[in-house]
Amino acid sequence: MINHEERVREIIQTLTNEGRLKSRESTTVEFKENFNMNSLAKYAKTMAAYANNCGGYIIFGVRDRPRYLTGLSNDNFENLDQAKFTAGINSLFSPALEWDTGEIQVNVPEKTNDGLTSLVQKKIGWIYAAEADQKPVIAQKENDGEKITNGDIFYRYRARTQKIRYAEMANIIEDRMSRQWKHMFKVFELIRKSQTANIGIINYANGRVTTPYGIDVVFDRKLVAQVLRRAKFIKEGYFDEVEGAPVIKVTGNIDLAEEVPVPDGDPEVTHPYIQKQLAEKLAINAQVLYALIWYYKMKNQKKYHLEITTSKSGVVHKFSRFALEFLQEKLSKLNKDPGALHKICNEYKARNKNISKS
Image (tube, rainbow, N blue to C red; front, top):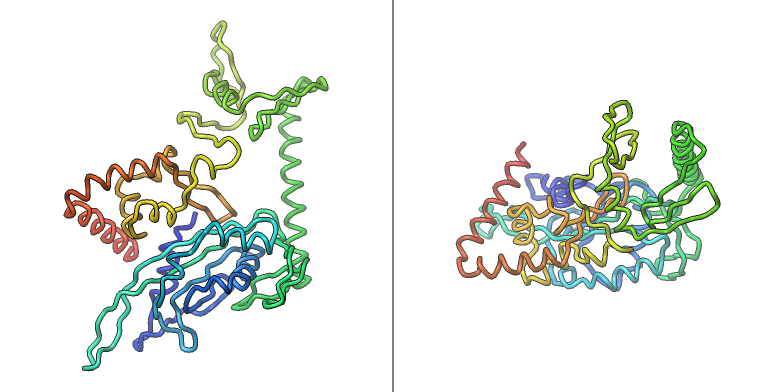
């Protein structure tokens, strides 16, 4: 699991005595001085290359050659239309790219006219493109400016994005085939261990039960979840028979202590907001939002928050309308006592400092 804010801070926090950034562009990092929506194709190309490798960041607010933390000099990034950006990158590449974005405030040492050094607060923006589950991500539309041709596959090599080479493409194909075979062997092993021909398969994604009798039955997914919660589970090898009690045999472990909200189709419906959108709805900056989410432990409650895995190492944090209403109510109270909100933000900052020290 990646904490993007902490990871971005790690990348940009190491400076030389002259204030230059020590970190260099790499297979997972690219720097830009400012965000410009007109450069969408350039960003999409880099993001697709990240997705075909292991994921990575485009960090805005860094001037190159030499690398200095200049901070964002305009509000283009803050006013990023995420729906338009998503539509733009996914019109160029398929399958759809999974990405996240955010802003952080950092203190940068700068020399004053009298030769002294003072800390100046700078705003840094970032876009994270997750490693794709289904590789390769392929160009499906041409763009002359970025020399993108329909069918192109880009890959992130050390500090550069280019068309994929044979070795990396062969690895992607081999990994994809290996995962498919592992999944099939796992299913075959479960069937073998069941020791019965009367076996059916429940597809929890759509509620379909495939039976061995040539007849498929479809249940509402909420009904499937209710049946699983109400049934009595026994673990293989541990069974005390209770007359009349419905029993499901479980090989392995299952945890249904909490009713997990299962979106009817797309999590965008039940948890439509990423953190940036939530901050915009609440008319607060990202740092205040992060502090409130941390203080009220909202990421521990699925009613408010879902952590959606986008790759082996990447996740996207989505928030529900309940989360929006909850924070609106809390902010209406906190606004009557500004000192309380200030205290929450200070506790969050202190917590971040302690984490970075450890």
